[in-house]
Length: 366
Image 1 (cartoon, rainbow, N blue to C red):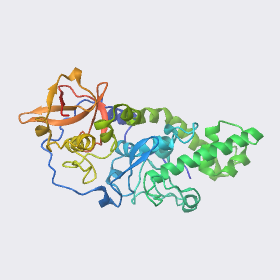
Image 2: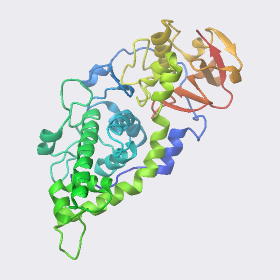
Image 3: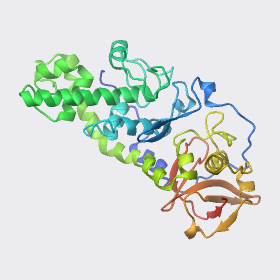
Image 4: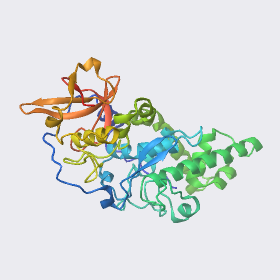
């Protein structure tokens, strides 16, 4: 893989602010959501299903899913479950390493419209045809290897990097190379294992002694290392698998779709529609999936179900209502615990976990 150009459209700081919810309640959150659509994810050539894994339950995202237009925040959200899974394959390769690599490679772009590298690399991982043939994995278990999608390239990268870590450790043991193991693995990922062994470490420009196509390895590795701390923080809001296991039920049902785009009128008791959820579509699905209870479709009408409880007595799975207007609440979310809520916020955003908005009220519907 050749060195890509770091192409993040907004600063890391801005992205962190958006995802952590520190900006407070959005100026305009949807109101009176409709349920007039029932187009499933299958409309984008991908099954409307989830994958059960040892690390949790994550959504399968096809290569032409509309979330490809949400970069970098939305794209990172879509990548996050797979980055976490790939980053758990071996101890040396963390999710932050993989996220940084994908930022450098292609800026989290995926789908049929992603650009092709000068070397012919395609998709978010910039795999060439030869590399994909040799190393490609069916990461989401859907029976095909999608070089342009999310799950398959990310999992392929994880497996490949862990394999290269083992190779680097053997080279270090035999005295063939020097340097940090992860640096060596990243360099081998970029320019190939033979180039690293021949250079005795990460190939770097030494007065023209290293071929130009190999000398790119050093800046490639340095760029990834420079981003790891930022991406560790960026990924933190999406790490809720342990939380889902702890609270179960309604919260776990909603967390299956972490990272899906907000779509006005999207979602119902059967799952997302039109490619995503709006706020009450998400709560409708989660409550029904966990309890079998069918809620009315809008935030205003959902406020009429169950009983109000003091906000400081809310429990995970209770619903939170806010953005109060003449007709009632314009927004609804699922309480997660510790002052956090799971919700589909507004246009241009994604299903995520963030701090409770000021002025919200809690309701126990089951």
